[in-house]
Image (tube, rainbow over all chains, first blue to last red; front, side, top):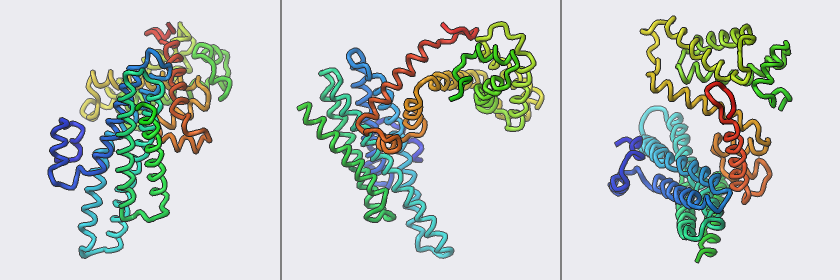
Length: 197
Length: 186
């Protein structure tokens, strides 16, 4: 199955596909969808609080934008990882080694860029979850907390995928950004969960 | 932002009729993206044909501006003119060559989308520069709150709320400018 089809699958079919044993979808796709779930929850909470919170509609619109972007990244990540994986497999083949090295570096770089984007979306989804947790109607606070926890988990998983990418070294700007996103998401989640317990 | 860019369509038409060259340039600037989008995204004309239609639309607007009965209806008039000239262009090229001519339903949907985008763009232009910048960065350039915060030198914790307030202003502006089929604002 092409990775193009992920968003058209039923949830249980996607989960079966995830568990199948192939290389994609994998951690990046799961992280992206986790962030998308979090953003979807934030949108729901915001929409249910429109009667009492002036910014609710604007927050819902931002959550929906994050949800769309994160969901798209589920397949972008799988594509990037499949391409990088194929390039890694060809690394020792005969022919033009310099050309192959360049191609491999470029594909691995792409495979790091996608989870970085997922981590940043996770930080933004967690920030929105913290905001809705503060201003939403009481009945939805638990959903806001759940969204914050999910967003933080997605950001953390994605940041780890950036860290283990072969082209990323300690001190790399991409790693700094991924860790900053992970940390920001964790702080938002901690704050939200603490205020709602 | 120039003073002319804040004029309503009707005021702009009035200035153009008086022979104000800057007003004419503003009119072209205001509608050029719209006309080009209708040609290329709506009717999917090849670039060369789209450029011909583009030139012809503004030539006719310039020469027939005096015939416009309702100055506020400038946009629907330009829209109708553009659509007619696009159809003429397709007919002229011949159906067998216009392989990507959209189906009627698809065309109507694309044109509605272009109209909506143009309306939002107009409304956006009435907001503060900071609001325009933040909405553009978040929704069009997909930038994260952190990037927006760093580049606009604003506290990161306030970005989402600021964007929400800018959206409220945009919504109020859009609701206040509901345009009827004749171009009048209701």
